[in-house]
Length: 481
Image (tube, rainbow, N blue to C red; front, side, top):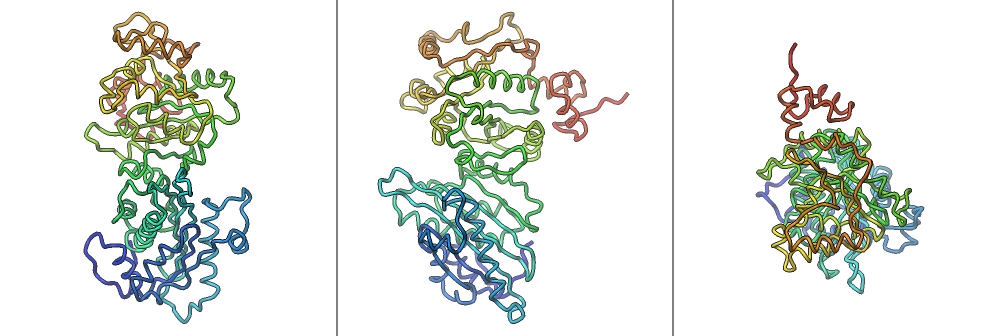
């Protein structure tokens, strides 16, 4: 819980950034430094304007010169300045200086913080809108260990001044949240957008660490970024750590499989294996630069009422992580939006593994009524120069034949469009699949798990079955002998 702070003033809900800054300034415990690179001292400015800042601000600086910044924080191995590593160096350096230079015996009730950001605002040509790293390292009691909150942001405004003002507000919200909402990270996350429109700035990664956040699962915080509309997609690795999509996907060959993975099945793994094998055969794919991604949409995770069971989400992710899979969560209902997203970070060969039954839905024009160009616009966005679909066959319960791209039947007006893209080589039928796996139906699988019918164990990897039984996942019921 937040510690008792001296000098606190009572504020109504959703205080303004100026009110937040004043409340912190009037607090006798909070004391720290501001180090801001790339967009002026916009966060510190709010605290100076609020008044009574002399008791809060030990130092405010902007090591804007690259040479001067390197002299203080050291040179990065890759020569970049807007990086997570640079931000963390800034945070540690500044809190270390506070401890070295301030006599704690004179102010025994103080606890320290350092706020930092390193950002690149919009360029002169207005082609690159800018991005940055923001963070705070802080104590919640004298001599306590430090906690950290670090986030990556992307600007969406087209004016430098507006970007600076937005950055300043978010910085104040972060500092205030660290001290007053630390017992509820979900509220803290939402408060970062107090008095900020979501279309002005995007948070696409956030990490909480330190003793006060030992209970926080950062993957869940990532999910909430998407759920609250703060970003379109988030990623995390098999180790559970959040990844920055821009860094992870940059110039990579990207192959993704969408699904609910409740739970991950033998069928899903066979789709991944056969899809990856075909993808590697593409002449412009570098086997050493492939990102294989498991993607789940918010629709995959909801119960049909726009509500997400957080434990269920983490159960699925933990199972995927145990299989060493990288996971993405997105709000991309349509495949073309996923293709557009990947194209933001890479111009290399990309692919989507998709079941033949979903391919039929892909060419349903009713899904694209919201687009002025309808299905033609959607297909144009989906099938960029570097995108292909890898088709895993499908066999319905009542069907005797296996459906693939060679024999698929669509509405007459869609069939011609489908044939056009097939002629362009946009579809690759996967081969050497296990036909027995085509009889896997997820709804029946979950029903068997919950009713204790043991047939389901043959449809999932052995290690997954063991975890489901030992942790009683997805409503698992054991039949008593």
